[in-house]
Amino acid sequence: MSVITFRRLEVASFTHSTVYLALLICAFVLGNPEPETFILGLSHGLIWIAMSLVCIAAARAHVIPFWLAVIVAVLGGLGPFAGSIGFLIAERRAAPGRVR
Image (cartoon, rainbow, N blue to C red):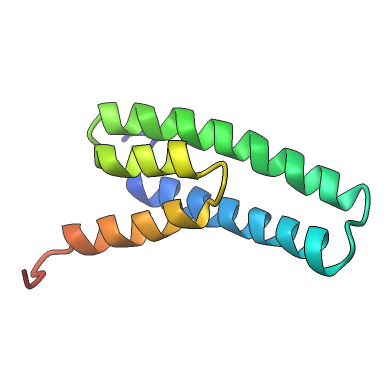
């Protein structure tokens, strides 16, 4: 059994999106409270780096499509929501019995 699976990457992507949403709320709605904004910003950056590296490895191992790894690695630093949406699209495309 592989440690890197589509489902685990999808959960990590949605977790990253949740951390980023919390960062946006802290920064723009709550008036930039410290140290919360720093912790969430650091978490977002570290998760993005880890997600990028793992998704590139997963694309090379054919766990996820290459286009999804590119979306996570390139757009994930600015908006991880793109990666989460990409996982939903990839899952829908791979669904059995899908009407084309």
